[in-house]
Amino acid sequence: MVAQRKLMGSSIAPAVLCVVVLLVVWEGAILLLGIPPFVLPSLDAIVRHAFSDTGRLVAALLATLGEALGGYALGSLLGLLLAVVLLLAPPLERIVMPLAVAVNAVPTVAYAPLFLIWFGLGAASKVALVALAVGFTMLVNALHGLKQADAAAVNLMRSFGAGQLTIVWRLRLPVAMPSVVTALRVSVPRSMIVAIVGEMLGAYAGLGRMIYESTQQVDLLSVWAAVLVASLASMVFYGVLVWIDLKLVWWR
Image (cartoon, rainbow, N blue to C red; front, side, top):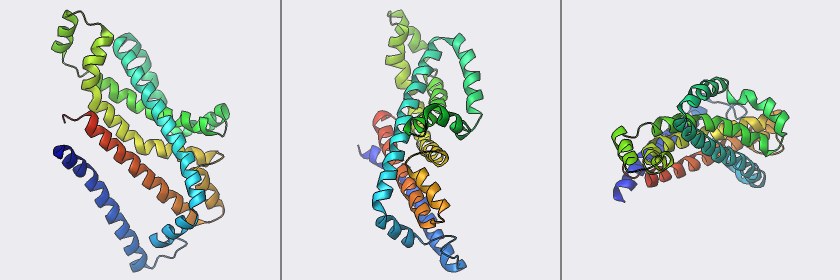
C-alpha cells in the first residue's frame, strides 16, 4: 500500500509541478510584458468569470463528459475485443491492421463532417468520433500486449487441455494489462480533444459548442473558462486512470 501511494505520488507530482510552472509563467508574462486582457486574461479574471457562469459551464461540461466517456468506453471495449479476435485469427490480422492503419492515418476530426451527416448533431456523432480515436490506440496496444505472453507458459496450458479463450483470459490478458492501461491513459486527453473539436464543428451542447459561440461573440473570458474546465476535467480523468493503473497492475 505504501509503495502504491509513493508510485501514485511520483506519477502525479510532475504533472502538478508542470501546471504550477505554467500558471506562474502565465501570470508573470501578463505582468512583465503588459499583455492586454483581450489577448490573454489573468487567471483571476477567468476563475471569477467561471464562478459567475457556473450553470452554463456545468451543463456544457456534463454534455462533453458524457460524449467523451461514452466514446472512451465504447472505443476501448471494441479495440480490446478486436485485438483478441485478431490474436486468435492471424490471417485476419494481416487484412484488418493495414485498413486500421489507413483509417487512423487521417486525423480523426477529418471524419467529423461525415459522422455529423450519419449520426446528426447530437451526442451520437461525438461518441462515435471518440470511439474511433480511442479504438485504434487500444487495438494496437492490446494486440502487442497479448502477444507478450511467454510461449512456454502458453504451451504448458495447452498441454493441460486449456482452450484458446481460456489461455487469453487466464494468461494473455493479465500479461497485456500494462499495455491496456497505457492505452487507457494515453486516450484520456485524446477523447476530450476529439469530443470538444467535434462539438465545435456541430453540436447542440457541450464545451466545444460553448467555445465556438463565445468566439463568435468575442467573449474571450467564456472561451478561457471553458478551456480551464476542460483541462481540469481531463486532469481528474487522468488521475482516476493512474489510480486504476496502480490497482490493476499492482506488481509493477
